[in-house]
Length: 498
Image 1 (spheres, helix red, strand yellow):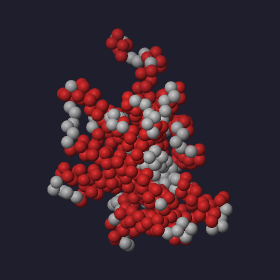
Image 2 (tube, rainbow, N blue to C red; image 1 turned 60 degrees about the vertical axis):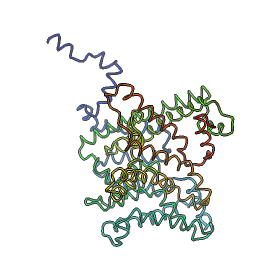
Image 3 (cartoon, one colour; image 1 turned 30 degrees about the vertical axis):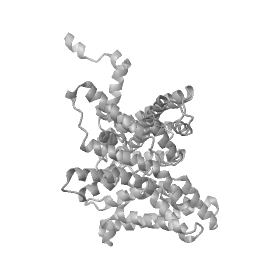
Image 4 (cartoon, rainbow, N blue to C red; image 1 turned 30 degrees about the horizontal axis):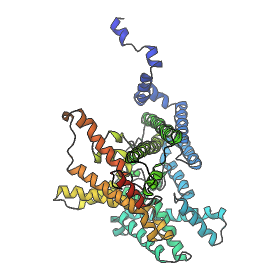
């Protein structure tokens, strides 16, 4: 053996105790033959699944009951990988029947309806299941209509038809007395549609594909076990492209899921230690909403302090949102679908449109699927710039605002149109400014080039992008907890106006 050969041989001390070497081994394990073989053994499968559950438990976005459902689903898909679709349909159906609304206000009102007609509270879940089964039966009819076109108008425009139905029923809840049977019946359907609208949209789009999934597979996406919000992570047609069919592919996908789950836990606890415990706990730095309201009341700090609060909130939010979406994608990967990440290094973006695609990939995809592409395919085909601008407007503005309103449709009937719509003033301005920024980025912004130099290529474009989205978050809210007027005052204070 030559000296050169000896120098090339990995040294034990380097491999075992060098953190950088260990990091490389960890990140590359889904390309390591020994790790892939280990991940196919029952011991490896058990370790991967246990590691995922521990990571999910360490990130308190998922309730204990939901985590229990996820754990059961993981165990069943591990034992029955070739029956993955059936398992997801059964467990997704159970999830939907147990928690159809994903909204505590709607839950309480629904249980109140059952109490009013003589059911005790403990039996209200039976009512939820009864309506849920009926809702799934209606969905099956819609799926069959997509396949057979019994009602061509609905089959050709399934999402638009669903939207018209939702708007009509929401209108009924606005003009009928709350104690009437008409209101209660209309409101229940609205509440079910509001929590599943875009999930159903993806199901109906998949049902009309040439190689459409089975009804069982489609029903698994009404409320898939990984759904922790009303934002679907695409639909069954998309998932079919990433499903692992061989033991080797499944092992690789699971290893990628475990890596992402660990990264999600690291992001979450980094945010907790740096911001919640350190900046806010030890240093006593106030929360962002408190800073906004104090500024609006004339009791805020200096302009520099407000900018600091803005960027603290921005960075904390990026870490926490990244942790939540990575955890869900990790879960999906371990189940057996090697889908792309939902967030990829957004702070490295050099343009506004690039950041929008990197930050919340699946929400951007939803807006593209339901608003951008349908508009792009139909409008202004002879005017390229106007075509891209109008399609972007329909997605980033119209679709963005409509998504929140659709998801909150049950609130209109409960609280009235006026009180509900005021919550969206701030978010509407956010969506408008976002749309302007994206359109400018797509059409007029010159793309940075490496030959422009280090500062103009690596630094300045990222300063612009991060600054734009940091300021924009002042209005990124549809809860109505902080009044729109207070947010506007704070926004103006950043520039020394208020």
